[in-house]
Image (cartoon, rainbow, N blue to C red):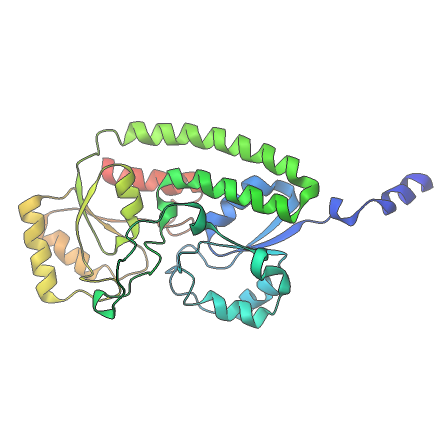
Length: 291
């Protein structure tokens, strides 16, 4: 017994330690846990019910970053308004440079502006950063996370690769099911509060005929609201898609005037009571436009 204990003491500590990974949002945490399994300890910074652009810089978030071995973010400047200051205050060299994975670099962003001007509202210079709402983009996200974890923890790289393959196989089955459910949704029209669901709509051939925001980050005016009501009456819409973090007052007004149903949807895990997992998040989106 003493010999066994002594031999165990000589083994590399990396075989027993878990990789502490801070992630910006719940969807990233869910994928990281699927790939990392028992070898990662994931800490999510921003709750799924919050506006992902604006996160309250709590001291607890600094503590999570200070003790992290790695950081995984959405990127596309979605975190630009809150995360850099927290990282600076954490003063953790492990999450600098190659210690941070920016997922937006592993997908193709849409709506990249040709010119930048405040007259166009609060636009993201790299393009629309809400790429994860196309469920197809979860596959390159998972691959990037697996490669990142393997680089940080080579001793468990083989297991990360096995977990990735298992996840990919299961996810492709879900994609096929969602494709089948959405087969008749192509050509439908919707209205949104903000263009957060554009990746999902684009994936399934659904047209957004307008947003309740006249420009990104600009509250709706009476003139714009009336024009949007006219557009709905003229072009038709199956529903109004709304996130959980903007007020629904204007959307409720439009719904009452047009008889178009308002559907408040999750943008991430935990945003609504039904969005309890990565799969449930997309189930909710699919259900909203196939009712």
